[in-house]
Length: 234
Image (cartoon, rainbow, N blue to C red; front, side, top):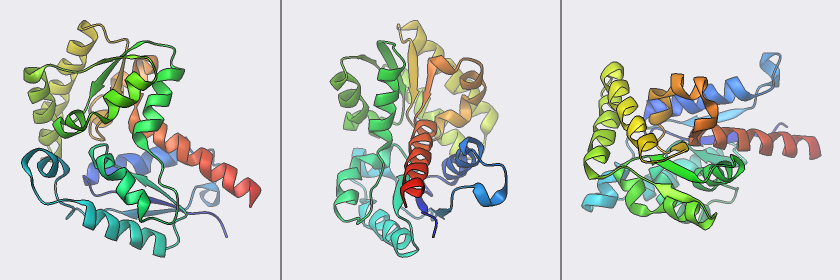
């Protein structure tokens, strides 16, 4: 039986769909049967990650553990999480999960090193920045970490929630302004560290791929590599 990858999504649905689309686009398949078997959990009742981290809201961990368990029970032999901020609970999830969970944070940091660039910017949620996950991972690699100032970060968050509310055009304009601000601060490349950000900056990332590290995309590439290695040795 072919290996199955599980996607823990629903945080939000657009980001989950974006990850699914990247699996389709990046898999070296010539027909339907050559695509990677995926189980997708896109149940959007997981408590808000930012609210939990910044305002003492309900923890999303129990719900995430529940849905990871369902993916594993459904046959998933590897898990990827379609949400950057959710990686704050990565170790807790992995501790109770019998199959490997691939880390978006570690994979993006590795991609930053492999880019050969030294000054790495970040576009992510307040909560992701507050956890220091990317800062620690980037600086551990000996790179310079650059993030928006408080007023710029407010615009980043407004852009993300505007997209979640369905207003793509307004959200895109706002995010484009913030990526320009990071480049003006000296960033040579920017990690798109929220699963909504690659959706908003897709055109820029396609035109200048060396200047953007799509955390979702590099995680999908790593998952595809896992799948190909596992199936070739099965």
